Image 1 (cartoon, rainbow, N blue to C red):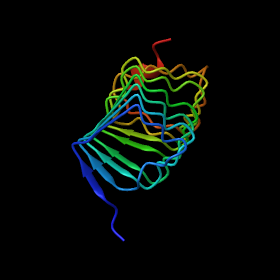
Image 2 (image 1 turned 180 degrees about the vertical axis):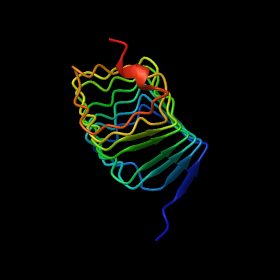
Image 3 (image 1 turned 90 degrees about the vertical axis):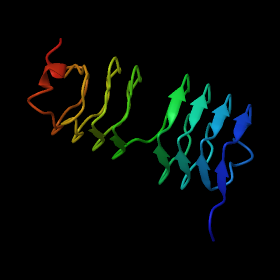
Length: 157
């Protein structure tokens, strides 16, 4: 069974905590002021879309693809991000406080002004990430990978 394809739609002020977002592909859609807290967003495809002022706290995003997606002023607490793959993302001013990013990959990502505080970054890959500032005394970095070109992000302190 094929999932429905949704394009160029606007979802404003929708509460998806009780009524689940239909599984499918969402391209060039806008989600504004929507509540996805504790909702199921698993196995979805979001392509070239914007989430503005949405609550995605504790949402299930297992096997979900976010490609070319912008999150602005969104609340995203409690998401499970172990083994997540960020690829060529701008993670500007993202707050990763107390986030478990074990085995996360930040391939080609700009993490300027991102906050890493009490974060679990064990086995995380920052080899091609830029503009990070990570305090090794305030985060768990066992077996995390960094390149010689960007290692200064650990030495700022």
